[in-house]
Image (cartoon, rainbow, N blue to C red; front, side, top):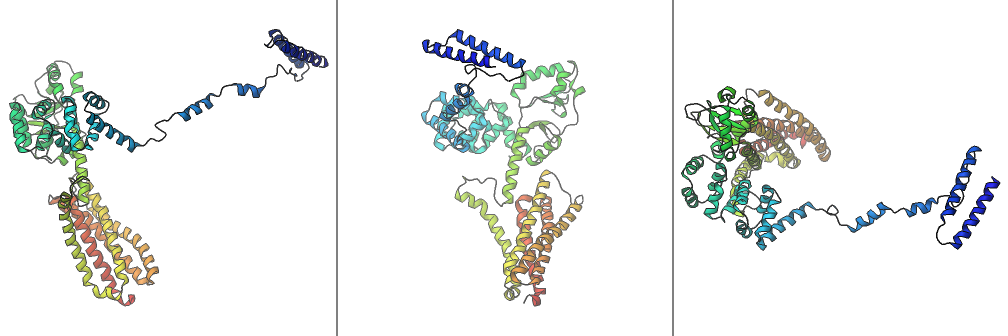
Length: 542
């Protein structure tokens, strides 16, 4: 080992001398150093000792690590210089920016930019931005879009937006758009127009289209006939699969639905006798007749049926489209699932509005007088029912005068009864919207609501009774409110169940009037039960 150390020392001195003479690293010195390292390693392995490395051959880990470029550090430094959208992304701000961009493009009046902006999004998304435009921008918009784009927008827009756009469209443009639109959409647009303009447009249409639209306009807007379309495929039952496919190729692009082919009888009376799925048609032999592969169990509705009932039928049988037939069974049109979805949303909004005593027609942009007209009648009805509760309280004026605490606690009983009644009523309205509810078949549910009132009343009454007893220092007052809470929640269960059911049997809207009768019952009877019990326990309260 001493010999190796001496050799290392000589090599180091020799290396320093050469480094001083030659500024550039000498290859021969590096080779010699490497040989010394290998020799020392070999000898150490023979003696089972750890080799000692020459200083020149030992790697300096600190220098080595520092010499490696830190890519992560560089990326972090670069990333700090880059401003990404995720740093301060605000969805609301992005939407406002889109709206401002559309307004700026309309102000600039460049058709090419507007067209490119439109093509970069879905028509439904573009319609949402149009809803926020003022009338001045709406008036300019038809001049900046082509007929095809306007047609797509009118098909996606709601009635109000359609009317706003349609008011600024010339008759020639509308008639050109009608050629590519489905008949039900045309009827919706014409239905929102002034009668004079509607007649003018109808007179300029083709006789065949005019006849169909005249027929559709005769049906109520919320009926099956009012939402149906006449663009469907109906073939006679004696047609072969090959003939049917040829017909579909010709008229398929002009219809809304080609997945279902409607089969009529051979007498050319258009009596609906069955349906054929397109998959079965494609997989059957060419010479097979439609009557051999059709499904003769057809689910259909008549044009006078309410749209809510139509939606229930479609949901029950999982249909993509439902045919509308006359009283004689002849097919008049079909209602597609996209229209059914609109109906479901419309009916849902209407029920929610009615439960609150408002109208689905009202929105945030409704005028002051229109909102007053829609709300005031129901407020007046509620006012009359409030007088009934007031008269009930007046009967027990002497009792309240002797025990002032009753005036502060009786509202708890009526309020809890109203909340519980609303819960039961909401369940019933939902069940009625999904189909008929018969008392004979659901009497067990009625009994359950009564017992539920007992359970809920006992639980809430116990808590209320304890608190009232502690606050007013009278245990009998706590007992009274406990019993009154049970009684009033039983009342809420009875009226919450029966009122919507009775109104539905009377062909009234359960969602519209149920809340008035239920809250009236819980207020009047709640006060009567509570104050009546207080009158009985009056000696213990005073």
